Amino acid sequence: MIFLTSLQYILQYLPTLVVICLTGAIVYRLYLHPLAHIPGPRLAAATDLYGFYFNVISGGGGRFFLQIEKLHQKYGPVVRIAPNEIHLSDPENYDRIYHIGAKYYKCPKFYGCFGLDSCTFCTWDSELHRVRRAALNPRFSRKSVLELEGVVQSKVQKLCQKVADMLHTNKPVDLHHGFRAISIDVITDYAFDNCYDLLDKAGFGLEFFSMIDAILPTFWIFYQWPLLQSVAMNIPAWLAKLTNKHIASHLKLQQDCREQVMNVRATIDEGKPPTRITIFHQLLRADAAEGHVVPSAEELVEEASGVVAASSETTGNALTFATYNVLANKRIHAKLTEELKESFPNPSSTLDFVTLEKLPYLNAVIKESLRLSFGIIGRLPRVTPSGDVLNGYIIPPGTTVGMSSWLMHRNEDAFPEPDKFDPGRWLDPESAKLLEKYLVPFSRGSRQCIGIPLAYCEIYVALGTFFRQFENLEIYNTSPEDLAYVDYFAATHPFDARKFHVVLKKS
Ligand code: HEM
Image (cartoon, rainbow, N blue to C red; front, side):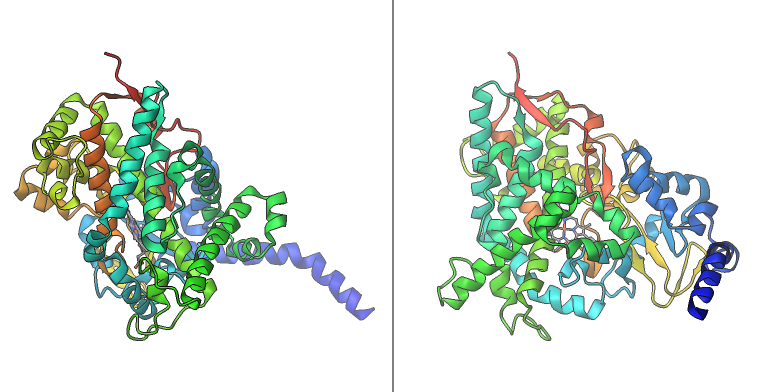
């Protein structure tokens, strides 16, 4: 009886209590918080829902990075974008936050919402990351990439053959998915020795990419409500299939990776010699790196999922953007084709990576494409453990600080007319060296992309081979607006945008 009366009493005053607590939190964040002196909108200082609005609701979502750009125009180089987070636009700060030995570490809340705590990409603890990355590094070194260049060459040749066949039937060819299929086929063959063969599937793996598209929007929802993420990832697959396609897609991707891991483990247990040392063979070795702990099967699944997720849209965006812009500009197209013809007179020869890398115009096209294609477009949040002073503002310990390639690559001082695709910016070696400082597609420092040599190999070989083999293509029914970006950590085109297609030029 007494219990019931107390409960009634609590319930009666609960709404008032909630209002008092919320008001207290908002007043604290606005006036007493250690970031209260940082400029920015009051709403962003008061609640994380400000970012949530732009990333989930406004204009279809994935657009907070555009709002952040506007905030910098209004408030200057340091802006408070959330109660405990600031964003920076001054390029001078980049090497301070993202460099080898930087004390800044990956924001656990942000990287936690991938649900892949055991993978190198999401590991926030710097020491643990150092060990995990050291174990993985040898498989992604330039030496390894050169040894396995054949994997890249074979996928590129396969795509070109399929494109040629489709063009003869006068059907528009979907290069958006074709280029993404190369990336996934390369990484699953290269790293797991178990190719997904998306290039052989209908629509170049349309089903697989629809699954990825279904996963992407959950990112910002899980960021806002991390508890939802653990609940979602633990529901049975059959229930997810019935109730939510986004969660079902997450679970399916993990299941695919689980099968990959089980296959490798089975061959190791049977004592079969591997046809290739995969990342799993590498990670299952106790001596893979000093301090390395052999991961469990589930941890390997997370590592595999992380690697697959990191390589699809990123390389795919660079290839799509480069090809679209070269085809859109006759002068650029002619110059590139001429250079390729000079070095490789036979159009059906193998265009090797090392020779392609030395071609100045191709090099400039690729740099300009990486500048404007944005594998990861939004902020890369890091936490400062001991505080800092940035652009004259005192930043307290524990603050999350972020910068983005979107703002670095479109800095008008470095890149006049920043939205114009102009490979000419990179042709003079002296000024190109100065511009490199602003080019950060792979980020920098100890957390920079591990796949840089592989990504470059794919991009050089795919673009070189493609433009050497096809001289008579034109863009089909795709406008620059279709190649705009939205941010779901991976940069992707709006889901309702038309996908990049090409047809044979009408003579
Ligand atoms: C054009 C292509 C690519 C771009 C633009 C790109 C971009 C990036 C960026 C910006 C990061 C840092 C992310 C962060 O700080 O949160 C990163 C990390 C990473 N990338 Fe890539 N990436 C590309 C291709 C690849 C490929 C092909 C792989 C396959 C192995 C890959 C695997 C990874 C991994 C594992 C990390 C985490 C590294 C770590 O934390 O130590 N990436 N990438």
